[in-house]
Image (cartoon, rainbow, N blue to C red):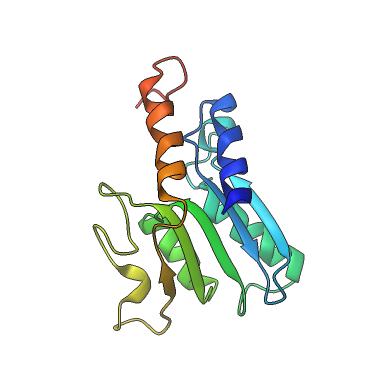
Length: 148
């Protein structure tokens, strides 16, 4: 989680919300790291989780991330939960809960929905205070936060 937090801490430099993600393979090696880049790239899908999943799939040469763990500083939203399910990520670890858009247990629980063909093991609240502190600091500074 500390590596994901380090990624998140770099996002405000581009006015992006400080969310960071890493993907770890079955051997425990970090194979991808990313942070939010929506403001930087103008891409509405450039969430940390999606970018990390893309990089991990490229690194492995396979869209199936079986045996991998996604570690992210904020509870995944619906977009990211969909990407996690599509990539068959078996395990997600996240820091802060997202009461407004979370899809891993707070607002929705898409990752563990029994109606779907793939379910994810979810570990919530890891380094939650540190993850939340980055977000609080970001949104308290009107010069760094995005327009909407």
